[in-house]
Image (cartoon, rainbow over all chains, first blue to last red):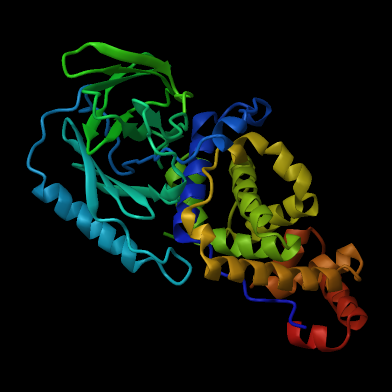
Length: 240
Length: 181
């Protein structure tokens, strides 16, 4: 018997998820015995998928240009070029233990705030978010899209919005919310626990918003095109 | 940057440097934890625990050369009672997003199941040894550490490492030891 059997490599994406969770944990409450303040794991387990968290490790003031309202779409050519190169690098680095499928290339929604652009790519198996800032490009993603509940006749469905993370340097905290939204909805506003009112970007039936804090998404207000409130609901939206 | 340089930043509280060390050594820590526990998911969690413990003790630890000896020290401790270690960090581990879709791929699942099966066979064999001897043998076989470093990890003299290793060899004499050592 060989007592040193080969151990497969950890999935690179999984490794990144672990790293980000670790850095979030060590950055958020460095001086407290935080493990005694147990966060109910059920809040995470019950959710269908994962909120995605992006960061800009080299930009110490990445959120300075952030705005609660997304700005009008600008020229996306350089953004998509940069993100495309990063997706190519992701594919090239998948390795033998990475996902069998290539990174998605279909753009679902583009969210622009200040000088920062977030692009959501959707594929059959996975979703990738690309954040481009003046400091560079960063990317995160997840799979198991097939596990997402269809929107059905609901107006809105969010995907685990309550995950809070820090960036790699522990300086810039970001929370990202993704979800689906009905065609009847013209505007989506997210209220966070720390008092932000964030207008999400809607595109192709999807909704995308992010804010530069650890504040959890608390409520969502849905408006029609005329500005009439269609629904106000706590997040996560329970009415499946 | 070397581990020593990065560790200097870590001691100053730079978590980005700690992230680099995580990327550099997570696989080695994972392999060790999997071989000690025989369960993939547990080993993944223990990687997080090892690094959280390492961060917690950063101000009291000095690194000369590689961080790996210290990581193995922590990993040895958490794998001795991994249920308690995981319980201690339950809240933090609960925040790790669920596994990705690639879990579902048959090849990946097969690789993991195969690795778990092989490591459990080894664990069953090594459990025939006294714990002290087993830990020396495991550290010798599963890490690139020198005997001096193993002594440092286990907190015992180098001579004791040698004697325990020799005893372990005698105890599990045969194909097992010949292949391992």
